[in-house]
Image (cartoon, rainbow, N blue to C red; front, side):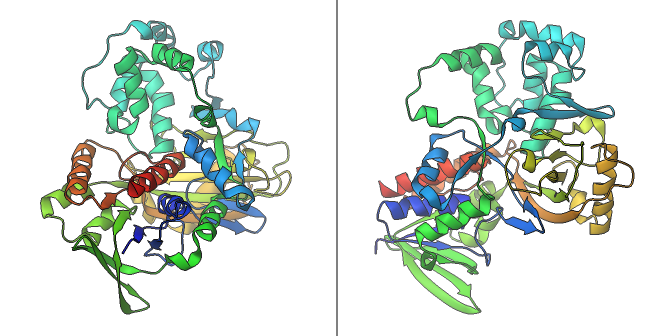
Length: 453
C-alpha cells in the first residue's frame, strides 16, 4: 500500500496531487462537491467572463511560474495589463488614485498633511514589541491614522474582507510584521530587501498580478487532466478518516453507497470547518483549536457592460474604506487587467459586498443586489443616470475568506501536534500559510515534497 490520498479538489489539493503524480506517486483526490476547483469557478455569461471566486493572484512565489511552466500549452499564465497598476480608493464622492511614489503621496487628498509629513520619520520610529499587535495598530503607529483609514483598511477589506484592528499583523501580514521586527522600519526594510541578491529562481517571483488565460477554471481543468480525471472522485459525501495500522482507512458515500479505501499517507486541504467530521479520532480540545477559524462571508457580483463609451475604468479596481459607509467593499475591473473578458468597448466588473463587518449581506435578495449594482454604476462609476448593467451574476459565499485572528496560534499548534502524533497525515489548506492563490500553489508544492520524503 503506497498510495497517497488528497482530500479536497481546490487549487491546493490539485496542485499537490499534480506534483505527487509528477514524482510517480499513486495519488487519489477525494472531493465532496460534484465539481472540482473549490472557490474557483469561472463562468461565462453571454459575452462576459466572470469569476465566482478569486479574480487574480500574485506571482509572489517561484512555484507559481513553475506550475505554469509544467503545464505548458495546456494552460497559459496571463499577467495583467499595464492598466492594472492603477489602484483606486474611494473618498468623499469619487475614486482617487492610490499614490505610487513620494510626489503623488504628497499631492493625494487621501492622507492628512500631518501624516504625510509624519511618514518622513517612519525609519526612526521605535520598534513595536507586541506579537499580537493588529495590522491597524501597527500601521497607525508607524504611518498614521489616515494611512490606516484610506490605505490599510481598504487593502485588508480587499484581501481578507476583514477588520484591520482584529487581525494580528504577525499572522495576517507576516512579511509586513517582519519588516519592522528585522529592520526596525517598513521603509528601511523595503530598501534592504530590494538590495538582497536574487537567484534565477527567486526572479521567477515577479510579484505581477496574474490569472490563467480565459479564467482560473482553465488552470483547475488543466491540473485535473494532468493528474488524470480517473484519479479524482467528486461527490464523495461524509468523508471520514481513521488510523489503520501503518496507514489509513477512509470511508465515504458515493451515489448513496458506502465506499471504503486504504491509504499510506493523507493530506487534507479542505476548510477548517470540515475537519471535525473528517478526523473523528482527534480529541475534542485539539479539534476545537484546529477548527476554530472564522470564514468571512462575501457576496461577489459579476457585472457586464457591453458598451462603456468614454467611461472606461482602466484600473485594477477601486476599494472603499469602511469609514466611507458605502454598500460595497470594492469594485474590481477584470477586463482592464486581462483580455477577452468582455466585448470590445465594454467592461467586466466584480462587486464585493459583506465581509466580516457585514455578515448579514449574505441574505440580501437578488433584486436588492441588482438595484445596488445599477445605483453604483451611476453613483460611484459615473455612468449616465438610468444606466443598467447588461449582465449581472450573483455569487454567494457563506464561508469565503479565513480570518487569521488571535486564535491562529492555537490552530497552528494543533496542526503541529497532530502531525507529530501521525507523521503520515498532513493538515494543509487555507487554515494556514496564506489565503492567496499564489500561497495555495506554493503550499501544494511544499506538501507534495514533504509527502515524498
